[in-house]
Structure formats: structure tokens, C-alpha cells
Image (tube, rainbow, N blue to C red):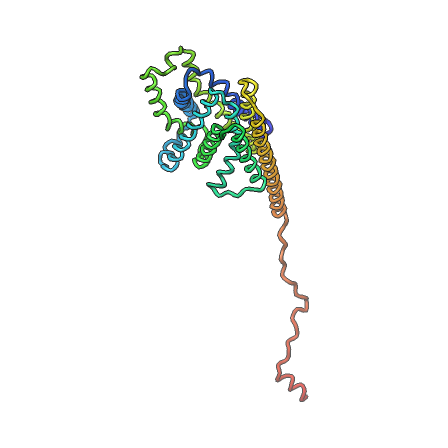
Length: 343
């Protein structure tokens, strides 16, 4: 059982992680005039540098030889690296293109997409409340598509790419820092090659916009790694149900920034679609909390039964006691009875 101070620290780490992810739309516009692909390539290169320093400081490199001996895990890391590249790239482009609200929708519907993928790919069985939430989420996408005249492609790409990334990470089953190091190592050479090509073509902004711009591009590694480190610190200190609730902080912050800071339009059909998504997430959260409470209650009941059984002494079995006149009179043999009658 975690102490109260540890849980409080974990809660602060979790708020810090999701808060930073929620406020990151304020950072990407600072990197303009760099395009989304150049920013993405710098993020990959500098993330590997930051994570490598962290792993060296923590002396956590023993996992590398073991990973290299597992081709299946290497393949899954490649899948994770590809999907997070799509996710990062689309998100950076969306923010700098003035689509912060639609980007936030992608992370709102991500839990629903993850559940749907669990049913389709892992043959998981859903509870009625989960089915209701997924169907409401689907209705929300239809409302948004009809209202805007097109499907919310940015939201769908972000949701499906991150859900696929999460599925691959679940199969890989290594720590957050180690996983990010492996993924960025896969991405490092293509990203570095792209930056070299940009420089050779005279299109790179890293060397032409001054040292301040270059420092901002280099800081993408810290912007990537610091929230992940906070998330890892939270994950070992607070229950999974708490983390599940905290994950909504990021899209909430993004949504509010999109409306109040970037002044993006919110017509009636968009409000209707978002309202349906929030209704679906409310049902999903209520069902998750109810299930977790029942599971805890059942675990407490079984533990109490086990303790009661362990404390109850086993009944002693004593052999029957024979009376003092225990030796019964022997029955006379048949021949003896006849002799007695003749007498």
C-alpha cells in the first residue's frame, strides 16, 4: 500500500505530465517558420539525445542486449515508432494550421477507439455501458462529419495512430524511457538524414533563423522527455483508475486553448459533436469506476474469507473410547449350545 505522501506526489506528477501535454500547443507555433516535418525531425533527433543522457545517468542500459535478441519486440518497436511518427507529425501540423480544437477531439475519442480496437483485434468482450459509450462516440463522429461537410480526419488519425501505438507498447512491455529510447533510435537515422537533406537544399531554418530558433528546436527533446518522466513517476505511485481520469486533462486544456487563446470557431454542430463525446466519456468513466469499486470489494471479501479460514482451527478427530467392560462375552459355539440343552 502506497503512503499518503507518495500518492500525493504521484498525483502532482500526473497533473504535471498531462498538464504539460495539454499546454504543448503553445510551444509548436514558436518554432515557425519551420514546417511540421522539420520540427518532427528535430523532435526525434533531440529526444534520443535527452533520453540517452537520462538512461546513462540512471545506469539503465542492461535492457538493450536483451531487446536486440528478440526480433518480435524489435518489429513491434518499429510499428510503435511509425505510428508515433504519424501522431506527432499530424499533431504539430494541426496546431500550426489552426486546428487545435479538432486535434483535442482526437485525444478525447482515443479511449473509445482503443476499446473498439480491443473488440476487433483482441476479441475482448464489452460491458453494456462500454458498448453504449462506443456507439455514442460513433454518433458524435457522424454529427461532426455532417455538420462540417467532411469527417474529422485530424481527430481520427490522431486517435487511431495513438491507439495503435498504445497497443504496440502493451505488447512490447518495457519501461517508458526505455521504450522512447528504442523508438527514437529507430527514427534517428531517417530524421537526421532529412535534416541533412534540408540543409543541403538550403531549406532548413535551424541555421538561418538565429541561435534562439535553433535552441527552441533543440528543446523539443526536453518537451518530449520531461512529461514522459513525470508520467512514469505518477504511474508507480497512483492507481490506474486515477491515471485514467487524469488523461482527460490534456485534451481539456487543448480544447480550452483552442477556443480562448487561438479563438477557433465553435459552431453549433461542433458543440453537439463534442457534447456527445463528453457524454460517452462520462459513461465510460462511470462504468470504469463502478467496476474498479466492485473488483476491490470482491478482493476484500475474498481476503477476509481467506483470513477467517486460516484462523479457524481444524476439528480434532479422537478415536472412540471403549467402556471399561470392553471385552464382550464370547458367543458360545453351536456345538456347546447343543451340549447345554442335553444337560
